[in-house]
Amino acid sequence: MNFPRIGRLGAIAGCMFLVSACAETELLVHSAKELSGSANGSSVATTKGRYKVGRPYQIKGTWYYPAENFKYVETGISSWYGPKFHGRKTANGETYNMNDLTAAHRTLPLPSMVRVINLNNGRSLKLRINDRGPFARGRIIDVSRRAAQLLGFQRAGTAKVRVEIIADESQQLKLAALNGELPPREKITGQAVAKQSVQAQPLLGSSAPSSAGAKNTAPAPQKTAYLPPTINQTVETVSTPAVNRLFVQAGAFADFANASRVRTSLSQFGPSWVEKAKVGNRDFYRVRIGPLQTLDNADAVLARLITAGFPKAQIVVD
Image: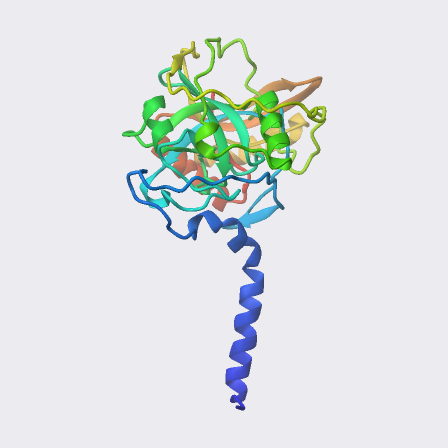
């Protein structure tokens, strides 16, 4: 059958559109998973995941660069996800169960083990990263419904958190997955962490510019027997800073003059200032707006900064 010329052109244009959208569609797989379980968690299938880092991808104009980073630490805002995705495939092939202690992260390897601390109440819990997200700007991690319940922010919807990777357990998970020995999801549910002082640990997540794609220098994991974390949903309480203020950070610069120029241009969005921070042996100058009184205020300022040409702006807690 011969199609009219306009029909052939329309078909070609449609194919070009599909190709251009391929990269974004691939990483939005968690939003297009096939439903395979019930909403109460009673019939979710037991599935094994695979180890995955993934290629750089773009969502809504923002590029993300998955990488192994066994020194990752960041403070910011956590959200949670539950019934809408319950029973669907995660980014590394597991079946999402909102009653497990898991989470979604934009760039950490899948699976990884992280420690999440609610800076509002000091509750601390270990979670296993097995999915990609959140893709809402201003959020750094999306935890399961059960994790949000135990961390104490399910009703509020969001919380100020500190997220840090647990390097040894993350490397054990990697080794097990690569060897095809990763246990089913219910055997590697996170456990509570030991008591410790948050203040005694440096907050590195927002101190320096993004090093997307940089190779991590952590030693390769040794081939040893994998010992999955014990199932334990008891939450420990840790000490947290007395003040957790919200800021929107436009960027961090090695040159003070550049930072000062950016600060001047940001004065129209609110109180802006430059803060000096040392990362390793290098000095950086962080340009921030704030402190801001509410998360709604921070979200509004973040949206304005992105529109004004600061695509890497982010909400930080300090």
